[in-house]
Image (cartoon, rainbow, N blue to C red; front, side, top):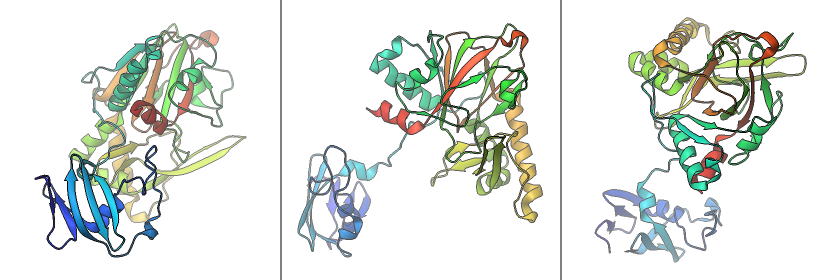
Length: 355
């Protein structure tokens, strides 16, 4: 018996490194070949198949594995005990940044990213900082989607599988003008919101068109420290976002800031153009609008801003549920500036990074 693992006297559980796990929890955590598919770790039983009351008749530790016999089944279970101690994290911890006070953003050539090891490191850096850059990406139509398909699945929307961002006459969306855009997250009116956006520069503007990024997580954490009441309002209440034209009417309710069950930030959704008039209870509307305004003022503060000019062949990938993006106005003469974009979901990126 390992000194780290102690069977409780009544057979009701096991103590591992000072943490106690009941017999039922251990039975549910069994990873023997009868309980899970060894190749995929998928369960081969339903929770309702387990006895309502479980005890332990025998337990020992062999290396990293608890071997436990459960009553009344007589089932001989195998549990990797270190998995009991660690909370599973789906992604690396975010490295928050502020303007020029930021980590090194990953930047690799498209050719270098053909190497799986380089791609893995690039994706891990992306998950920590929320953004990564590729250079020397061929300036071909649709290349942004082909690039994204190396590690994820492209999600089509009403804007198409690939969308063009350039100034056009008689545009029906501000993105298709040469006007400046305040930092925002895309598509808050969708459920689910696209997790990751890729933008590929095919042609740069002669004047203007700087790309702006803001780490919404860093700003949200600052709001939580400075004004916890405002933070609570923005996390505890959802508001309606909408986009509609002659072809679609897309609506979804989102909280501007969302946390997981530990209180860690999970997403920031911010798009002033798409938010609808408040339909919250009358007694909180004024306080909510004050909190919303405070967050908006913070996000416009230059201290949070990182700016860069994308050159032809540059590709930027960023977390659309964390980073806000915008641009400065540019000279739209002859419709010079041309980016192509697409959306992919974060889960596929994380899967590629893991394997």
